[in-house]
Length: 335
Image (cartoon, rainbow, N blue to C red):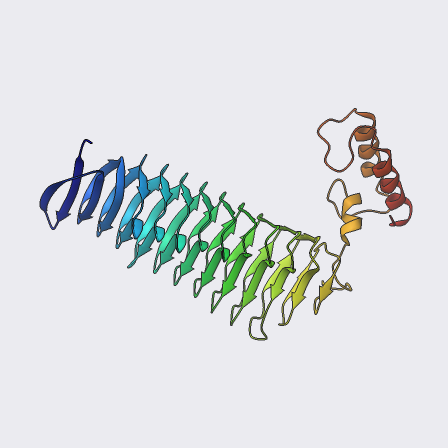
């Protein structure tokens, strides 16, 4: 079996040892590209790129401490305790296009970190897919997060983060906002088929916005505001359908223009429950929230039914049952 190297650089003193894989532990380095690594540790580094590596069978796949302007992209990470771990004021890091699986803790763990972009990763079979702890102003988007034992994404004491365009499915809970996590924006995500809840907000979390998400077919609750000390969160323009309880609010939160069937302690502004039911939503082909006597929508439905318009979503070619439902919505808002 051929041997590779362990590369240690501690305060400018480089030592190289024989090993089966490349292992990098760099301190105060900058402007380096790393490939084909088995483990990477970066301490007080700048402009380091880690790519095309199998980071496996370690406590950490990539450990990033007090490091900036760096990237971990296009790697496979498996069978570590943590996949990628950042701490001690690390900032301006890109974590993208990685496959992360089979971790004994979190796939990606941000601690005391800011301005980190996490995008286009596939994360599954970990404890928590992405864990934020005392980390703010990060962006988490376009990730596929599934089949994790606890949460797809959990935020603890972390604020002003943006979570958007993620697909979060078949976890215990989808997204969990916890412990003084404030002013986060959660939008355009899909959270479905999770074992318990699509999204939960708990323990003194305020001023979070949950907007334009699809939250469906979770086994217990779609959206759950858990305790009586998480207030002033807003829930707007979400489709929350197919959950035993679509929205459960134990706090003092508000919102409007949501679509759901079943609620506990929740009413959209000026409505009993949500602004539209899930059945009514099926009629609203053009998503303008107009159902009765929406002539443009009825014409669009007929074009889909006749095959004039292709790639239709709710009414397809010669789908007469759905066409009849659309007409019933048009005349009297009933199915």
